[in-house]
Length: 434
Image (cartoon, rainbow, N blue to C red; front, side, top):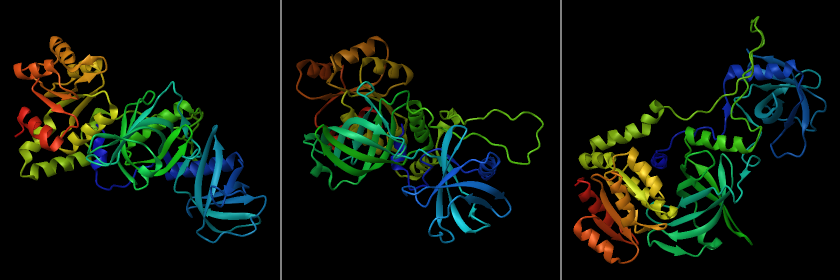
């Protein structure tokens, strides 16, 4: 579950893309550029039309500066402290950095403060990978967890900072009713409580919050430009890996360079590229925000009920991704943390095998299989020993009524689901929370 990020308090945002901030390595990069006499492109701004070619002439570690020489001086010298953009290539990778102008040096030279960071040159606006119909990456977007609009559709393109989403379906979350999509519908929307990216190639589902930046209507549909927010380091790395697999040369790390003056008689070690690994078990155990969450629970007068909610394992078998996301977010906001999701029988079997389920909430019909048949299959396989069964019914069914009376089903809840009025109190009763 990555929904924890949506409820975090304001924290410093991690770098949206791989960033080199190590001072020793920044010095080593500048020394390497000086050693190989590499040409560097400079601009007064990233979108400036005029580019000036320069070379590094000196690196002064004590002063915290470096000096460049240029073929042509700009018509107007920048003021001290003005940031200037530098673009260079190293080991087949293109990088960018920013440095503040200090003063004019010798003939056709200028002095700059050392950069604070080096980044890959491909920024969000450039490295935006597209997805074909054969790799249908989907997204579910919720304006709020309890009200507002719910949107689902296909991700047309993606970067480490945002997505372009083609709108396929819109619902009113509170009324659980489909709404006709049109540009006017999104005029008053800015913040988005939940964005879930699904079916990313070779990556898990990712969740974060976001901001709606623009809406465009074309002949082929309605499209939303969404900025991704509250991304953790793992989610950022996962997105970077997706992009790196589709765009050869989009580095996920930085070649390590030796400092000038390092004494080493061995041959220079091969370039190392930082490998992005999934979090370890220790890293996944508890984040600071989760520890704080637990502390607040312990201090709460309702701590017993809150702790019981956290410990219960619930499986959602809901085929519609938008409805599933709404229900999942609602349960999470109510304090449940061990929520598992399935879209069919096979997934449900696997999850029920891996987790001791306390409850299963299942649609009346999941694809071609009914809720009753799914429950029977899970019970026959020994996967639902003591789990409570809740069926979300779209229409009346005699077999479902009989099953509820004889004990095969513990509860039926009609669509649209009244969480606060019906599902919440009954779920707490069935799970022994209250």
